[in-house]
Amino acid sequence: MHATGDRLTGRLRLVPPPGRSRPAPPALVLVAHGSRDPRALTTVRALQHRVRALRPALAVHLGHIELNEPLLPDTLAALGDTPAVLVPLLLGRGHHVGRDIPEAAAAAAARTSLAAPLGPHPLLARTLHDRLLEAGWPAAMDEAGRRTGAVVLAAAGSRDPDSATDTRRTARLLAGRLGVPVVPAYASAAAPDVPAALRALAARGRRRVAIASYFTAPGRFAAQCAEAAPWIAAAPLGAHEDMARLVLHRYDQARGATVAELASA
Image 1 (cartoon, helix red, strand yellow):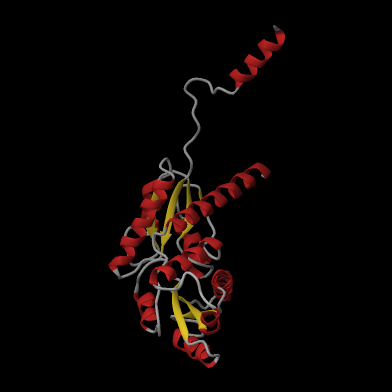
Image 2 (tube, one colour):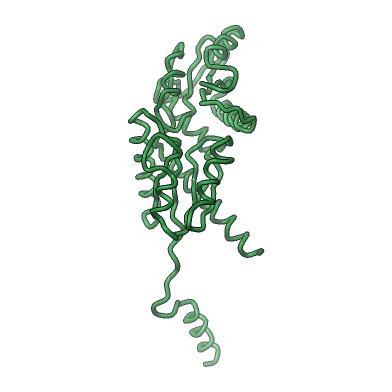
């Protein structure tokens, strides 16, 4: 009897008292750059919907660094004292990740955590691969194709050397999936630009070259890079399901880091 009673008592301890429920998780704030191209906002909203679909109980908001509403400070102000995790929809380190977003977070009334940028990560390489396949990249490449094929990974560019480091890491991840060289190139602020990368590949006998669009959403830089394509140009990363999974992965990482910091304080 005592053993049975002990087991029942143990089970009852697992049931929370009436009226007590788990606190809601921190809100997720997607931090987009912003663009004058209306397709960018449409794409970011579609990604927001995908994230919500994967985790329906999570409050998912959107804020922009510039050019589009809502701006990030306005989104954070509307949250009031609701805790939030900010997930940059940016593909590597740079000025926005290192300064602009932390400053906005520090000015917010709520307790906020800042997640890492999306890249580099294998899920990005998988998304880039899928976008290339959609554009016409062969699902299976023969030996001749591997000898003459290559990809230019077209990115926005930054003066921050950490940004270029992150882009090169993504290029290596994508090259590992494709089995051909992947060369980073930039639309601004860094070298080489896309035409220079194409010329360098042509000099190495790489004549069948595709452009992989290392941009979250359509915009001026993405279009400019695609126009230089000698063969096929993939669409930007967009609202791919792996992008939504990566957003939630960065959110969970940031939450885990915050819990660990509080436990050790």
